[in-house]
Image 1: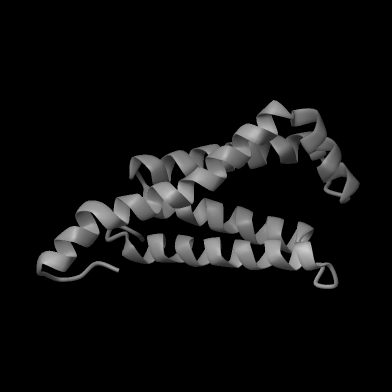
Image 2: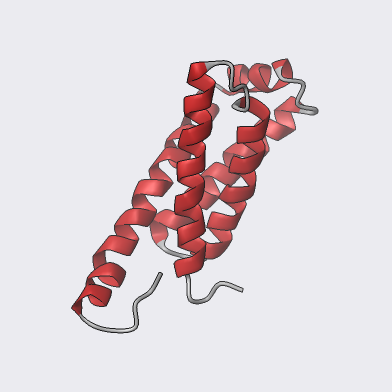
Length: 130
């Protein structure tokens, strides 16, 4: 969250906050690129989980990941981008990673919860957030 003064506040807003946004954006941009490069496999993966309209859902996932990721990367409309990514992330996490009997899926669930924490922080730090 934004500090109200001092050198540490300047360091946060001038360097650390943009760095944090870029680091969060990277996973969404990389994931979106992977989905585009392997769109057929992405569609089949979604269909295998019973996601309706798998092609449209895959296209929506790519759009949200890219637009939200670019929003964080560029520092433009960051609260809106973070909110879109948050909704996407919650849906994806509950659909694909809530199998706690599998160690890997539990780790993916926890990783996504960590990313969710970062997105919540971006939303809270955005002074223009509605």
